[in-house]
Image (cartoon, rainbow, N blue to C red; front, side, top):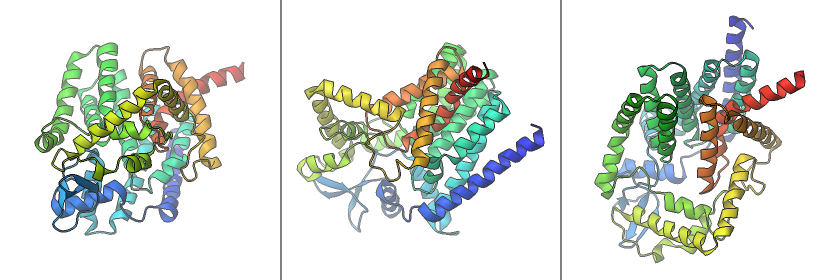
Length: 413
């Protein structure tokens, strides 16, 4: 395959990837910014406070768009990066076009860039052209990857950042350059600001590559300094608002949502709303309202788990299996559509085999295997949403390479 034809294939995938995403935009796009992002945007615009809950009285607050004269409580429930993303676009759209349309168009653009970066990761690992085209095609046209761009959700931005994180990490494993370390640290920081739990994977990456693998203490220190500089403004905001150093405070809510008597793999928020109505909790509506509320949820979740540990261990492994393969009881629309569920199962099986095969040899693919299993085990402590599989899709496709190579060798023999 010569250079021109390889370039044409990339353009071909990007062109038809764009067409597919435009069709999703036309037929499936969100029509408004609802749920938490809409509330955060409206409350910040009207009050200047990044807040999700509005005080009703001294001991009762609810998530809502504040009306004139109502007090917005500062929030630490949601990571801030996607809010910054939609807020800036909302300002720009005032001069251009509808905010929602502009958000989705930018997400489509980020998704196309993600295809290019995924291709670059495969090239950096010196994978064969035929295999690279096959994997990039799957990534580009995987149904949930197309659909996600048309939704007001942080997932497209998160996948974009993860691919850059993996790209610069793969470059650092082969040839250490300070420029790549800076970019690696930057994208790690952005991922921490879009998913608070990513700080755990960031520290794992530092430990694996720069301590265990490369034994480069200087690189660890430089990366930590860069990341700390980038996330400190938000940490300072939280310390000033809540008198505590934290990125997010949703552990208790997420733990209870995924661990309660009315168990669902996807979590059960309605159980929390019905069982623990906020007006009955008597939590004071000061700046620490969300922190105290989350602590209450955490204690309730721990009580449930302690009451029947074996049952919740079974729930945990059921969520692991659902994440690894698929959720047989999913209630999400179109989850069992053949164009979604069949490729999902094939990729799940091939990546799982590839993950076990890749554990044998130290390096980038061994890191991906451990990263893959850590993600599954961490999310399974809480609950599993269908969009979470998109976060791991690039990693799964990379891990599938080993199983494809083994299958190819067996067929040739």
